[in-house]
Length: 211
Length: 79
Ligand SMILES: Nc1ncnc2c1ncn2[C@@H]1O[C@H](COP(=O)(O)OP(=O)(O)OP(=O)(O)O)[C@@H](O)[C@H]1O
Ligand SMILES: [Mg+2]
Image 1 (cartoon, chains in turn red, green):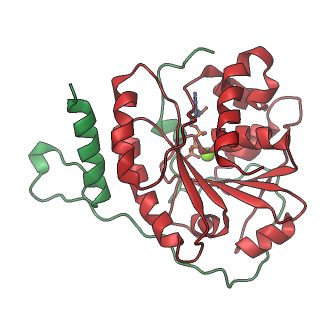
Image 2: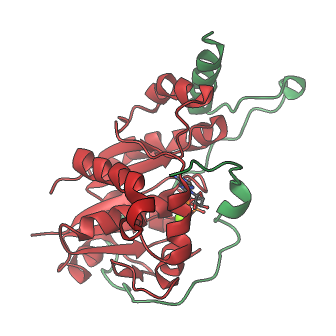
Image 3: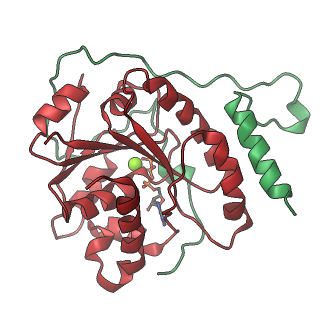
């Protein structure tokens, strides 16, 4: 079966792409053979996987040069899921290719005005991509939610402007996500401390990813 | 009561229309420039150059924003 490609994308820096990519991949690894491709020159996913003493649950590799969807699927055909950790820029070969290659684009957004303003152009890019990748699915994933903040509560109305559906499953701001990166593990490997975070990632997988 | 919701929604609408929210003092002449378009390179290029790389890569100064300076959340939700 051809790999199912999941692009974690948002041109806004710090939206949670790497955090979502690494933990989502860890959750998918429990189900099927999965790899993370670090498309970001910052190399955060690679660095995350290299932290700590235990191996990360999922292989993480980088691609470079003039890659495309065909080459990616061919090279990684033994994997069922390929998770693309995209750079914080739409203005690159990489991001354009990621949108063309993917079956689904997950777009983490923070409940903050500046993040919403910076992210809105992405919904227009995804519309354009549909010419060449008509089957692409896309969802916004609210990250670093603070359920009691007025701004978080005001988000839902504003997100309707994106023309992209919002996943019901959301990610709260939790220390576990940061500790996991520091230890070079996913929240799945954190035992008790990662329990709620695992539930969030599982909810995203169950809602958005075909198994 | 709905002020924040309305403000936020209208600010996103403005951003969508390509007009970043402006400060009151510079409202006259500073419409935001439209965001850069992605290069529309097509998939016809060679399916090559997928290479393994386990070393940390360098930062490209032009395109990449540092999340460390973008975001310093002051509070973290406890688990
Ligand atoms: N749900 C969360 N709870 C707590 N901290 C979080 C959460 N999501 C992300 N963070 C933290 O926010 C920062 C930015 O996250 P991350 O690096 O995943 O974003 P990014 O979109 O990949 O950034 P960049 O655009 O620089 O690649 C990191 O310090 C990360 O640990
Ligand atoms: Mg990142």
